[in-house]
Structure formats: structure tokens, C-alpha cells
Amino acid sequence: MHSVRPTRFVPGVAGAVATLVVGLLAGLTGWPDLVAVLALAAYAFAWERVVALGFRTRRAVIPLVMLAAGLLAVVLLSGQAGAVGGPYADWLDQARAPVIEGLDPDRGLLLLGVLLLQLSTGNVLVRLVLSATGTMRPDLLGGLQGPARTIKGGRLLGPLERVFILGLGLAGNLTAAAIVVAAKGLLRWPELSSPPEQDKVHRLTEYFLVGSFVSWLVALAGLVLLG
Image (tube, rainbow, N blue to C red; front, side, top):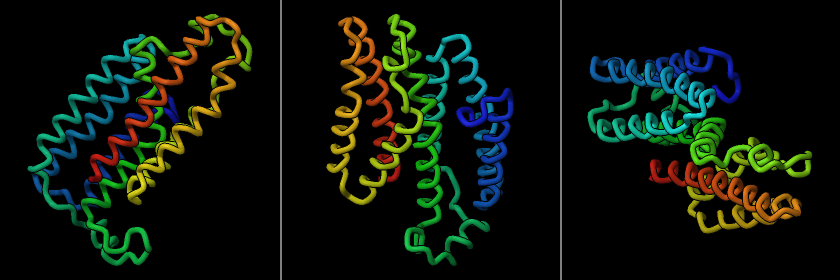
């Protein structure tokens, strides 16, 4: 939501409301689970505000640390979570679609979350890492000028490649993901080699490599969670 609709408070509120709705539909209404859902909703709102602040003040390390702490807490406390049920589990039990028929409700909810992570949220994570490492906007930092010297299309290519890698991994063909890596490198080569100044080429290459590896790690992390 932060990437799709970067309006003050709207993305955070939308994330918090979505968390509450999914928790209620999944039947997580017992006191321990309800407290956890409320805490996650508050965390979703707070993290989006910290992300916005991080981009505005160029302190991207803060939201990255907050995200890491939140993920660690969720993993450590995951054993205390109740089983998924409610209207969501009833609908999934009656579904006859090829992909979701017979799917475990817990795994189905996790699969949905991992898939959504590959979209705009993955782009936000890539931007945070690029900003934290000082490799953001090489066209400005390196003095590059002109549309031909700016790497474009990453906001669309990133989600596409992550979903592609995730799909190949779930299909048991993770080795085929090397095709995505090789193809992206070949397609980006003209942009990386076009500036005549060597130091500017280095800046573009660093931007490309850091962004690409973070993007691929987001997809691989999703596969680890689903494993």
C-alpha cells in the first residue's frame, strides 16, 4: 500500500485494517490470537510510518531493523498461534480450483502472504536497502544525465521476476530460476555499459547488483517460509 498509494496515514491504516479482517476471517478470535492480531495490525501501521520517515530522512536502516525485529518475534512466537479456521477455512474446504483444492488453511494463508510480499512490498524492501547502502539513484549521485543513462522498469520487473522465481521454486524447478538471473543481466547490459565514464559505470553496476540480489533474496525467503 505504501508503494501503490503513498498518501499520509492511508497505507498504514489500510494495512492494519487488512490484518484485522484477515485475522477475523481466519477465525483467530480467541484471546491469545486476537491479541496477536491486534499487535500485528499496530505493527503494520507503525512500520509503514517508519518506512515513510526513513525515506524522507534518508535513514532507511531504522525500518529495516524494525522489520527484522518483527520477523524474529513472529518466528519465535509462531508456535503459540492457534489453528486457522473460521469462514476462510470453510471456503477453502469447499473450493474446487486446481491450485487451492485440498490446500491446508494455514499453508494457504501463508502462501497468500508470501505472494503479496513479492509485489510492491518487495520493491519497498529493495529501495530501503539501496537507500541504506548509498546506492540509490545512481543517475543523481554519480552525475549521470539523460533518460538513456537511468535504469528504468525495476518497479515492474522486480515483482515479475520474484513471482517467477517463487513459482519455479514451488514447482520444484528452482534451478530454472537461473534463466531469470541470466536474462536480466543480458537485458540490462546495454544500460550498464552505455555511459563512457568508468566511475559512473561502477555506480550503475553497484545499483543493479544490490537491487537484484535483494530482490532475489525476497523471493528465496518466501520459499524458505513455505518450505
